[in-house]
Image (tube, rainbow, N blue to C red; front, side, top):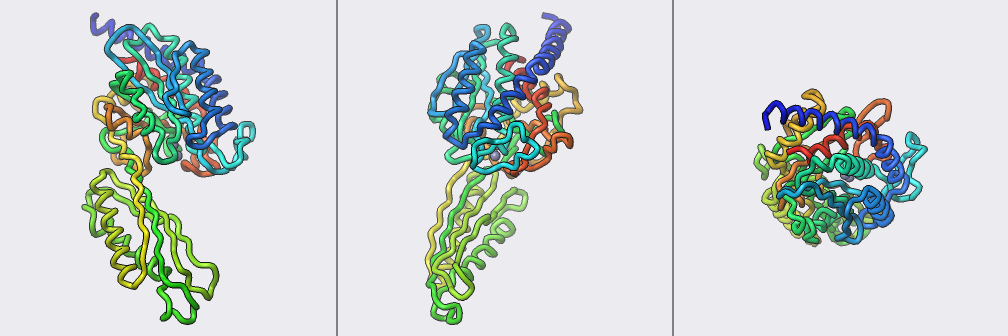
Length: 404
Ligand SMILES: [Zn+2]
Ligand SMILES: [Zn+2]
């Protein structure tokens, strides 16, 4: 085939992808609103799973359910040794939303809310599925649509999906995934090669002292004073133990102690998070935390419990897959819609588990606009998206599976 002809087919395909995304825009909006109204927290996505399975079946897509919640659709194209996986996450957060701006579709399930945009990821992928079915003649090989549960909660639905072995059996060669991003204008695509999102680990700490009367501190071991020293010393880990060119964060996000103003309590409980881009750095921080606890707490005659719960690996975008995202985005929407990021962000994502075995790329889809009041950060009770993101999102996602 001549280069000119090839280019013509490509640009025809690009315009078809965009047209199809427009055609299915209302469908995606209604799916997103249905899911938004009926959110289910991590690993409890039973109704959501049934809903997705039903949609896929109606599209004539072969379905699988390797885990208790979440599911997979497989689209068979022309016989070829090519298997591309696309991933969406389907779980909601265990929180209440402020649904004032979303009154028509605000969560009807107390304690559950789609404030991370996973409802939109699912809708976007179902839209992409419809597009792919319409353009099936252009698919070489197979497209595997992953609707995974539990992104928000350890161990991570991505991990469970990988451990199920289903994707390996399908022979997946590359994997792509996206996240709505309230920091970018609706429709923008942002990504980078290499590290994109951090490795989030969790820490749980209890410091035990000896309680007593606040007026007789000499007869106690004050765990609050010890906790204060521990937290202050933790701040020296990143500034004094980590290579300055290596990004890292140590945050204590929760601290609980005591009951009233004149009692020295028995213990202090703290929760925190550690963000890094490599396991080695995470393990160095873990060791330093433990050493500080030992020095401060045991030095004062107290004792402590320390748990370091390893979270998701860091998102590390493989070069050719990332190029593919950028090229396809440019081809579809022009250079202006693409933002090539310089630095990673410190948030975490369990898409990283797929990248442990398959080359893959993760990218952000801008969802911010004034009209939709969708600049609120992820996990904020007012979090919202501008649904026009689907026009870009579904066309790009389908394009990644279609185009060579
Ligand atoms: Zn989230
Ligand atoms: Zn998320």
